[in-house]
Length: 331
Image 1 (spheres, rainbow, N blue to C red):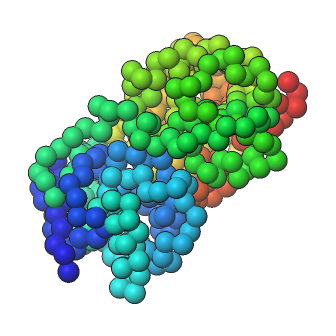
Image 2 (cartoon, rainbow, N blue to C red):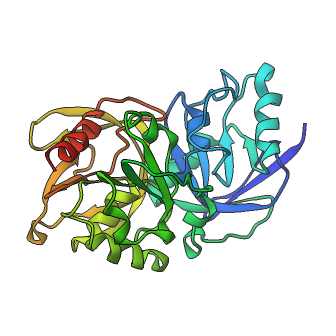
């Protein structure tokens, strides 16, 4: 057994069995309570820059054959309580292949409780030195080679999840990295999707993207998901703020304010939009856990902070995609 060490800012060092690649790796410590879908979480681009602590005590029970949300792990590290012995080597080799460290420790509950009380903290594998991931452009770590084809829809890539394309499979989709987007590109498409992704929505490298979105909103049907929701919100004059420990799991209840319908949804975000009705946009969705904003609606646009496509988790809110289709038909 290899001995591994995880340093937690403000809490100390935890020793356990090392899995994956034995390397120094720093990031923000966040936790997820999901009992399944662990591979989809590990490969979710929105986790870039973060060390993921699984609070569910039994992870890895079905191996690593599940289709991921991107082509490789995006986390900076993995912390688990237990992996079944028969599958431990397979799980460890998967992390090793992509240079991701991990640790098995019985102290996951202690780490999660510390985060819940004190907010997200920085962590580090193998070295007692911490680096704030938000000081760099996390999106540039996640976007893959763009699929360059003429499509009915334009997806602006900020680190998109593959499941989004699955539920828009009845359309051809052209994908372009966020830093290559300009508003003229919307002229030949029926709709625009601003994808999910990692990091701080008010990071300086995204300022041009926000300015460009001001020229898109209202002109073509637009759907924003997670980070896309936050950037569209900034473009219409709202603000964002960092949450204490964010929303990350598959069981968050969200209310559709217009219909009163409640859906159980998948979340992965550490920042939230501060809704202000004075900015002239309607609040469409709201968290029933803490009352934070979960989506907006305006002329020719709809946004959701949650992930209507699941991956992992429920698909209670697939209606978001149907409303987007309706906007395009009517437009």
